[in-house]
Image (tube, rainbow, N blue to C red):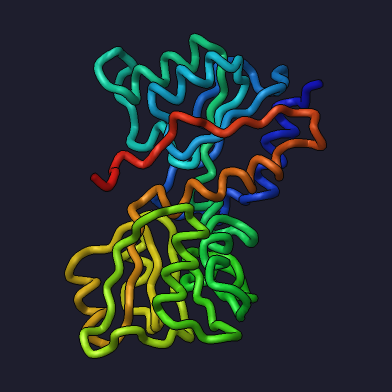
Length: 265
């Protein structure tokens, strides 16, 4: 069975409206090897980063559409040669007839998107966007969670490890508190330091945060959990796969070769 490419693109737009993306981002359909109106989709391949290894995997699986969370084309390409990975990937996609789409910060900001999933590690509570773009404050970059039931930091850390399937995370805590109580959590997937800058929360959760920003939060009595960039994102892919299945009409696979470039050794 297949679904037309315009139907798949409409569903992606419904899940994560591109108007929610940050102004600096490059989202949507980025590689169109043939007219989209004539294209159909039988297999979708999901990844965080579209590396050459992931592209090889997608070609092996006869993929029609790759949904790469991070845009494989970000800065403008002035030429398309064999000189850089971005150029080679773009050429290979066109040669293989594979479409490529990126939702990136639109998926971060939308309701039920990546940041809602991320902050869900801590349990029930009232959630709002840190940088809201709608009147209700539920869509936008970052999430602030007022917990219904406070947590000790040690319990919050354990929940993050379980949620992200990580054996280790990096934690900063106030020097005068061994296991502080967490009532308010601010979270932003990926490189969330700029979104979290200046927020008042007991705990910050992100993938990347500058050293001096962590020190500043620690000095004012906050804790931080830093997990490395894509570790805060990759766990959402199974949820996206379920949402893109079209009742079984489309085969959706998740890359096995996509991984955070940093490992603990």
